[in-house]
Length: 516
Ligand code: UGA
Image (cartoon, rainbow, N blue to C red; front, side, top):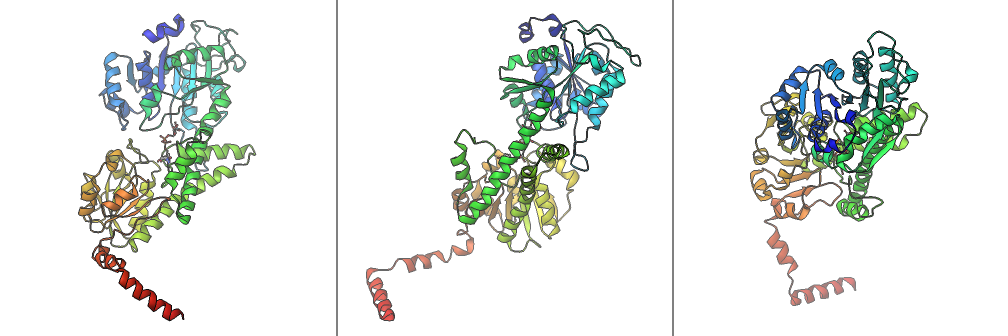
């Protein structure tokens, strides 16, 4: 508890934390907080998820997560529980990490957030700080506040207005309207958006670029600053709505960078420039920055596509012009078509061809396949009559649910080399490190036809070409000259080029005669 000792506030030191929702955000957050010294309950209404966690296993793949889980199950600082009501009742700080999926019209579906607010209301047995960590549209916190007040019957005018540091011992009785002392609010709502990336969540938790907290009371601010102080990074304190908006703006901006470089990639291809070098050339300008300028098959995952839509929806609802973000989305949706066009151009006819696919996850270091461009590409190729052999280091169990094995049509393989065997083309769709390290000569030898279409610019065109591939990538010239049929022709070509001075003289005389 050494970190907590520095806070010098006994009520803070006794604070218990509950993290509600044990998903890609909640679980890394809960374990990170346990590592910082807090007692954390990891609550989830799914008993299977909780049973898996209790056994020391995570239900999804995330590097470095399981060792931390096992460490804090053993230390006793992390307690998984499927009793969400109990977790809320016994904790003071509640991090809300439930899902906010996309609704039919692009709007964020806040059903789970509302349900948590109502659960908080019925378990409001003292002061509680409810921290929104899930990505939500601006002004959600106001609804959370209203809902808790409405269902707990706490006077709304007294919520979030206090600056007291009391021990919160006055219990609100469910079903009874409670008058809180003006210096002692029964609850505060705060916003603390997460910026964790899947595949790097633990690393991101301990080394954040910044922490953003949106608060309405000193008490909420002090608690959150105390929690995050050991991380030693800039803490941006704002009002709640601003903090909520920062999260959507961050994801929208990163998506915009990706669509921008993808548009540049198409121009590069048309004029014979190299997008990787363009990205380097512009990215070294600190005003632009090198991150999120990798051209490819577009962004996927649970966050960018849905957050972009939710942000647009919010803007349009309030009369703001969101045309820029619409274009970002449109460019992204076209990426898979642009890639498929490349595949068709290389293969001519996909019908009856065997296509090897490396990578199914929406990005490396995760088993998450939600909105993965790879799956859209595979489905289109299957529709055109191709068969696929697929491999991903982590995402195959998830992929099998949406893309079941079908003999002769969809084959799951155990290694990248097995995948390439007998294929008429190899598609690189997720840039796992393991794929970068492949022996490309060996891969080529295993294939029926050595065509490599790289949707992530993972390989150096010269390396792919040296290994004997016809190589296509994104926003860079294709390398065609190593197609095997040309190898027999090469000596003849060389002979033609190696003209002797006498032959040249003879040819020149002939030309002059023609010209005269
Ligand atoms: C994203 C944000 O980066 C996190 O800061 C945020 O916390 C998270 O969403 C969230 O809202 O929960 P994540 O979806 O895990 O994180 O993944 P990213 O690394 O951002 O990648 C998103 C997609 O963009 C992937 O499909 C990736 O392949 C693609 N991408 C990324 C590119 O196509 N080019 C790039 O240069 C970078």
